[in-house]
Length: 328
Image (cartoon, rainbow, N blue to C red; front, side):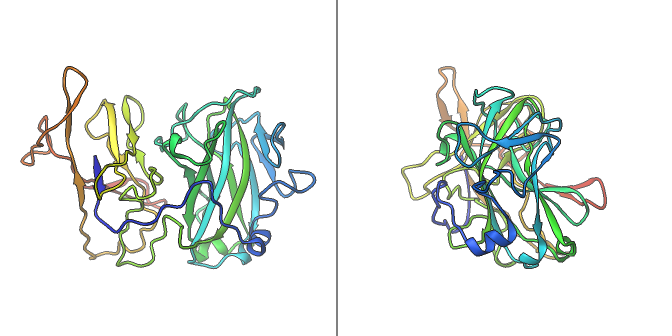
């Protein structure tokens, strides 16, 4: 189990969507797909899009030829957005086996779009002409308030930069799932953040880790590191103590480095010469021959021993300079 230090926030039920009609009509048009035709203001990208049968006010993306971009997109007006202001992004999605009405699951803990169980996301083109995810499928799937008959929640925040808004429009995509599935999309929204929004970093004196206490009752903003092999899975059990919800990375992991991972939402505070403290509270378990998990002590003396304690690792990437720097 792991729980980072910090102040817990009140969790917002996943099925509750905030709304600002004036802003929504300015930024995102026909996000509820209730115009005629339902595809108004939306366009297919490496796919075909139609009104979804058997669902009121939803769009269906089929014949998707690209896992990253195959879906739907809309150009949103940049003059409706304020530079360096936070916005909340969300939608409901349902995955179906391509060409059928059979719903399928995905794995929200997978950060890669190339995996056979990758989940959908909402993305924009940033100032470097790269596609950048801004909202992801909330996991575990069983926690989602919209998880009824296969519907899942996309959720995230973003803060557009002046560089992004220098263009007249910002391209927004709903895609990112294996090409052997169709995507049903409903209730796409972009709104100003509110008191229930999760993911906003208000200032550089704040915790840069989002949902570090599992205070939302789910693992939004968290993934499992690595691709290929066995990764285990993330659970979010509720304890009978003041700690409330915690994260539990359970199951077999093929490599010791395959832990939980978060891409920091805001890295602007990580300036040269700044100093940061990283902390968390852990419990360490061993599974005995009967399959029962027994708490045990870990070894702090060597991070490579068999029962070593967990460690933190940070990796730094730049879209302008390929490669990475790693700090343990």
